[in-house]
Length: 394
Image (tube, rainbow, N blue to C red; front, top):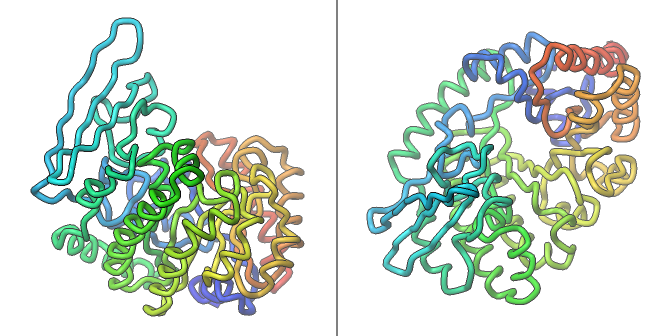
């Protein structure tokens, strides 16, 4: 099988010549490369089943939403953005940002700590906001009308730029027989960026209608972006959902606030003949029935170490051949910090418990450390995969 055939068969829970190994995120290697093309080619040279990601390839990582690569967000002309700094002598400065719209003004206040990655700048959506924001844009239901103004359909210029760049990504994938991924989609991860994690969960309990409306706004924006991405021709659409597990949401809350939009987005992908991948690395067991209900094709991020409640054997027993599982080995604790024997044992356990069908092996969710010793440990994992999965199939 070609790598593309192998990956698509695994995603569809069909027989493969051997279980593919595809790193869901590999920041350490990307940091050693000068381009997305070099990054892909080096993975192929390692024998991995790499993918070509249009979300990063065709996007300049707009600072308004760096953690959500893809078609860039452009505010309509009726939105005015104001920014200023509040200097403080004995504490981090406070960065202020206002979004002035015909339907109201949204305000953000963020502590510019020493590790703040955007000097003098505040993005609309970003993981770094969560612990540093003193005020989030959405604080009450009346703010949602203004939020709609900030999340329009993709600007034609941005969509066209994405489509043109995606053709280069697809050309490389065609040359190397690799799958092409599209995204990133988003749901309540964006809700957390806009409201704050704790605040959002409290709203769900105390003001559920606010979260109902917020979820629909995010879905409509996400679906419009999806249509443009699906239109360029991809094999797999990926939605980030790190913050949609039961670490944050009860299964009942998931069913009310997340499942309706997720179901429609999966249907949209399938209408285009595209598989749907869902990234969730912790608190996944309690939402598995909902993911199956939605029709998700592959769960990305099965983490047996840091994933709260993750049981790979029970997960496979629950999903059977209805949903593929991607992951199986913890990236930080096991690969970056573990002993060689621990890495080998983790690979063996993942292959045994997730099974030969509907499985894609990967560290979860990332290998970040660029040190030579870490890269050597990556080699240990890859060698163990080859000896158990590849060699046994030959």
